[in-house]
Length: 208
Ligand code: HEC
Ligand code: HEC
Ligand code: HEC
Ligand code: HEC
Image 1 (cartoon, rainbow, N blue to C red):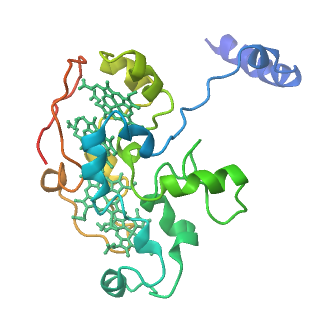
Image 2 (tube, rainbow, N blue to C red; image 1 turned 135 degrees about the vertical axis):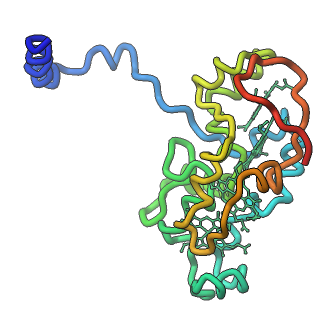
Image 3 (cartoon, rainbow, N blue to C red; image 1 turned 90 degrees about the vertical axis):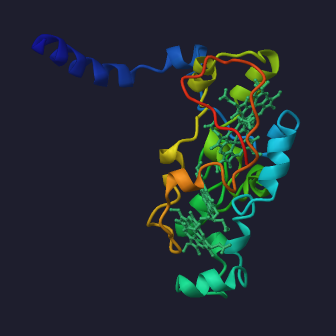
């Protein structure tokens, strides 16, 4: 065992010196990209329409100067400040912050492409709770009766308490206690019954 570990350790520097031939002929798979909520609309029209009306869909607005005056006062925030440029705020108020295809990091110059994609990723979008659609959306197009296990490998997330609490936590200046059982399904979107059986490892909720 010990010998194997030592051998491993001596191989590392050797490998680092060799040009990365393997990865150029067979590129390492990229992380799936975020596509924005609009990309989900054509296949999930009702979810999209009901999501659009929620506070989370509009949550980027709250960071703008003059917006959400009452909440800002209570949380001792500066009503005149433009928090859309503040890295300490943006991650929880947008979709896929700093991830491939996601909302670009603030505090640096954006490329033309980043400037173009950012508006569609403002607010807490579909992919904030369901994972990036870059691989799952094209796959589902051709495999309407996909297996859950297949799309889970492509980054699909089944939203649970952990998903919500990644934002609904004490780092939020306006944090209110978050009781998952009370909030789940509320103010997210209408939950419809799936048409097909995807062999899910989880129970699906239905309702508002
Ligand atoms: C990417 C961050 C993020 C995730 C993930 C997230 N939320 Fe939110 N949520 C927010 C933000 C930001 C607001 C504030 C929206 C506003 O009022 O501008 C909010 C507001 C809400 C509200 C309305 C205000 C309230 O507290 O009653 C509900 C309900 C809610 N979220 C439920 C959930 C549930 C349930 C989940 C998980 C399934 C979830 N959220 C996941 C960021 C998030
Ligand atoms: C850890 C994630 C997180 C961070 C960081 C965060 N927020 Fe939020 N924000 C939320 C959530 C979640 C809510 C919904 C209420 C709650 O439970 O806090 C919210 C609600 C708000 C609201 C109330 C919206 C309304 O419609 O009344 C304002 C304003 C706000 N945030 C501004 C900010 C500002 C400004 C910052 C940075 C100083 C910030 N947030 C940082 C998650 C976050
Ligand atoms: C080309 C069509 C298409 C697009 C685009 C699409 N989906 Fe789907 N999606 C489907 C189909 C088909 C199903 C299965 C529906 C059923 O069985 O009723 C599905 C199911 C789902 C489910 C349920 C997953 C499960 O099995 O538990 C979620 C969540 C979902 N999609 C989210 C999204 C999100 C988020 C986007 C955008 C990033 C998106 N979809 C884009 C076709 C699509
Ligand atoms: C704040 C988190 C959150 C956001 C944002 C969100 N969803 Fe969901 N979504 C959920 C939860 C929670 C469920 C229920 C999961 C379960 O069955 O336990 C769900 C279920 C679904 C399902 C399966 C059931 C159904 O209603 O068909 C689809 C499809 C879906 N979402 C698509 C979308 C699309 C498209 C968007 C954006 C327009 C979106 N979701 C935005 C949390 C979210």
